[in-house]
Amino acid sequence: MAKMCRRVPIESQRVDAPLTQSATFLVLSITDKPDAIRTLRSTLASIDDLAKNVAIRDLGASFACTVGIGSDAWDRVTGLPRPAELHPFPAVKGAVHTAVSTPGDLLFHIRAERRDLCFEFERQLMDRLGTAAAVVDETVGFRYFDVRDLLGFVDGTANPVGPAVGAAVLVAEEDALAVGGSYIVVQKYVHDLPAWQLLPAEQQEAIIGRTKWDNVELEDAVSGQCSHKTLATIEDESGGEHEILRDNMPFGSPGSGEFGTYFIGYSRRLWVIERMMRRMFVGDPPGLHDRLLNFSTPLTGTTFFAPSASLLASLDSD
Image (cartoon, rainbow, N blue to C red):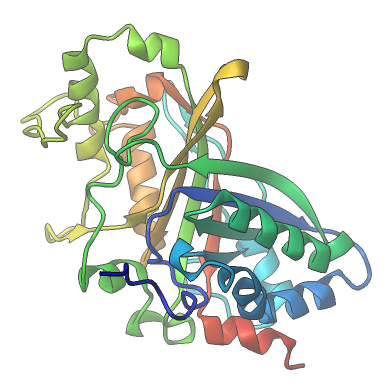
């Protein structure tokens, strides 16, 4: 029986687009060119058409692009009321490690099963933008075996599934003007892989909170040092757990000794990811930071808001 394939492209701004084999994380800044904002608004309003240009070439490749707008750019680009929680990424300084805050006006999360589709979309996008935007960071990620990171562990097991995805990542009635959008936090981590590989597997598992080969969750520590898994699990004051959607990807080059993970988290509530950062970098209790940070250093940290597709399409209506 012939393999079924998608008949239409994935909808614009689908933050829950499928995990793919390839992704590009493109962070841009707006230049001071006189027509920069007009060009940006026009490009963002037509991003769905631009995506279709590429996606139609292989509908089975699950091409998708999600656009995020940074706090400092929101007013200039949209001219609309700000999402209630949108603000720049706050640096988090612990006793040993720091989650740095870095600039970025626009994020394009481009993914597909084929690297060439990501490349072609980015090429057409940059042609459209011209001198209106400059590249702050461009990271090309790849899927590593059975969705593992370069440390050897399965990544993304705690993601919500089914109906829980929308409830976890899409803004709802609590912020009427931002309904259907999602907060995004990105961090580019580089790993000290040689030092990590010197640790026995049991010690690595204690740091992560899961077994390495079969991905079984380990019991939480009753007191004292918590695992990465525990520190990244966020509960509110009533004990309710709040999930986020991660679409992390490995990146790097063995030849240059670069091994990394690009963290990207989508959330209905920005405070959930920010609390996660405080727990990891400051520790819970304070002083007992996430031991994974002894081997993983963030080079960037930026917050964006992905508005609904209808909001993006309206930007060129003036």
